[in-house]
Length: 422
Ligand SMILES: [Fe+2]
Ligand SMILES: [Fe+2]
Image 1 (cartoon, rainbow, N blue to C red):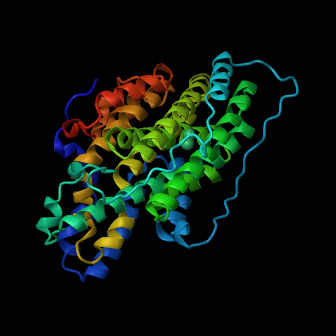
Image 2: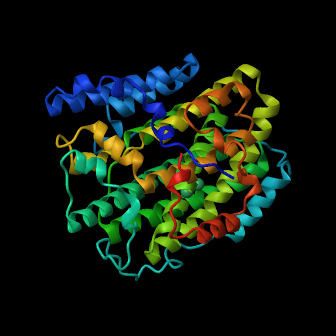
Image 3: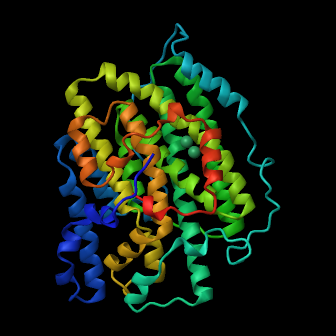
């Protein structure tokens, strides 16, 4: 299904101001250098956006997330949600596939309190039951920068990364809870409203179980990553239901499925493995629903100009997710001012586990974009430029069952395929 990539693919989209100016910024004092790097990253993000409508959509969210760090102020965030609630007093049976998903969702409900083995003792430092395998990272870039972790530090570092990943999953699930409630109001299919209500319950359960795991097992919670905040902010503020759908059901859910799948495949910790298995089964339905709702809308009801805007928006969000999920919160905790942010990016980008993560994520996401009509020839060149064209031909969510996804992951459990990474 996929062909091996060249290592340079990972960094192509980083030929950016941060990289080009790195020899200049390297001479600055560490604190100034890190601040300059942060701002150059924002400039890079805005330079990548070609469509002014996409800039208007993502720009204010970028300001709130990347500059003002609104998700990190230690207080609740209020978003102005502006969408229309669509009522239909005729209660039509208008979408048989969504009706079937609704039936499956009702049968697939589970109780997060009683269904998972919460009595399991979890010790992220126990080498007998690793949450992440030792080979997840290649420490050479850190060592070249003078950082050498001893055995205990390396285990603590991996525990930090696991807590960071799960914290971002949790924050993404909160976004999914809010967005699924909004799209249930806004969607025009009545069978979609029935189905959407089950997704709201699913997302509440996901928030519940991820939070409980972090709170009682890892005893650590990281703040929301600024880039994830940008995406959630853009979805909440956009009044168009299909943009909320596209952002949440296709992009963020696609990311989640990839991330959950990667972690499910490699973790040896039994409680987390069971938790992820249950969540993956729900998420597969959510992405399937997103494909059903958007395929018809985008291919039949939108103008070419509207399609072009969504195509560009999806591409920019895909880049945001790929290049900018750099776990800076962990960097700040461990290495801020000791190594440059550029060295950290190299370390994260080249880590075998992170490469695997991106591979699974994009093999889920890109075929869904094709299926809903957002992968026309004009945008394919952009995906090709950033090394993502190898995913054009994969199976989309409506062709994949959760059982098939899980059996594929089980078949590959314990193996890395870093050569295939995005
Ligand atoms: Fe979820
Ligand atoms: Fe979901």
